[in-house]
Length: 281
Image (tube, rainbow, N blue to C red):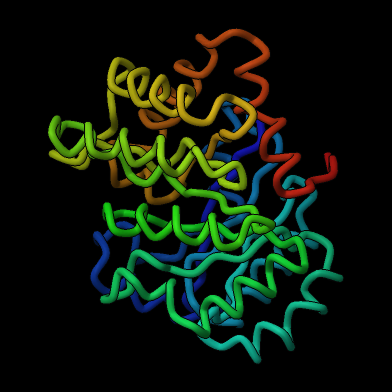
């Protein structure tokens, strides 16, 4: 299995200011060896690191880790989308760096939910589109999903990876129905794929049950199909959202209940295709 959404952080390498308001267990450094060890019992053989800070220092840090660890298939890194000049300047060197597989910003932490629609951000997205670099996109509000539909339509050559299925509001029935409708609208854009990752109960913050995840996965499969879905642990965030073991055991057992070809797509094939991953171990 490829874990398509693994985080690490080292506060000596980047600021991670958002951690100051995060749950106490997350404020400590979370290293790669611990993260990989936590996923190994569930059949994870490779992982994709995903940015957790908006600094070029963290981008350099993640790529250093990829260069040193064969079990890392790549890294989705930060570039300042609000600064297209910097994106244009940095992108050629990053594309030439083994292990660079995509770009992400912490869209969900912006006070303005329409931040991604800014003129400078659109210029940066056009640069990613022209270079064939995927964009990971974080959506936690209905407005974020609305904007994703807009972006995918205006940048049809840009592969957009919706992280965490846009955070389905598990446990909130009315909101859940709205999310399912919006997910179908997002999936109607053929250049959008999604990660089955970071899915927790909205009402309690705990891990979802097998029954709840089965329902979420059925909705996602109906919208995207297996060839546009991939799995991710969301470690170490999962450690404070019901526990890493509870999260991964429910995730993997639910996926393994699917027909073999579908399970293989979610476990391996989609991430390999979308991120252009090459076997390293």
